[in-house]
Length: 128
Image (tube, rainbow, N blue to C red; front, side):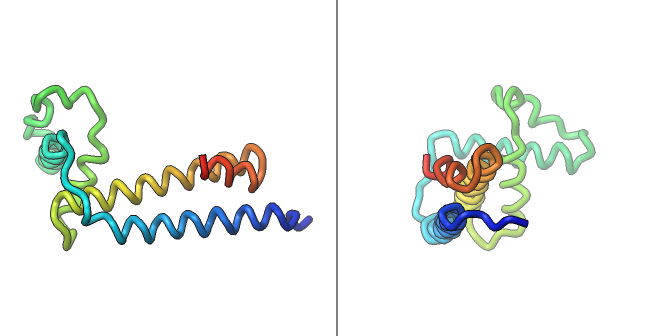
């Protein structure tokens, strides 16, 4: 196998360091935010969706809650499920999960850029 050029390895190491740093930042700041104007509604929707699935589709209140049945509720339901075991508050847990999902999206941008054009393009995609 041919070794990648040094600048390619450097770009990969920088990207990994940036992603690791962002995970650390998420863990340092997730408790420092207030709730947004729709976060209470989204939190309630997640709880309703969790009850919908836990009841074997009998509790259909999530399907009539405002107009949120039109939108995907996977994140809200994941937050509601995580809140059952999280040592943090409801909204702190949402903020932690949201931050980690954001970092996961940035990793996806890096991986896609890397797939398209190598490590330097991946790093550029991550930075942008």
